[in-house]
Length: 128
Image: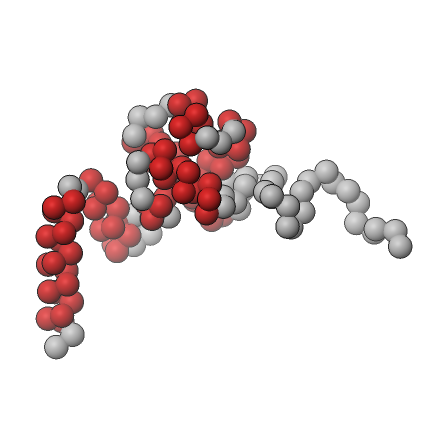
């Protein structure tokens, strides 16, 4: 049987990574977040590629939302930025809750623990 779908040269579902001509909306959002955090950490593109152990083209596609990152890739990027994986998927502009989570990135662990105690107490008091 002849394949009725022309070969476009693009990878298909199930391939290692799927390239897009137009950015995927969520991938573009994640890519912008990667770039934002890289800029905040003042890490150059080339240094980041080396530290994260990913290709230049792949990072470029990630930051532009042209490829959907795998969890493994996100973990590499988080390690290279010395942040938690959660930070790559937190979009402070989307909600007050995400903005609050993002602010904790800048706090020392002792303050985060104190904040957690206060929030736990607040949640318990509210549930009464």
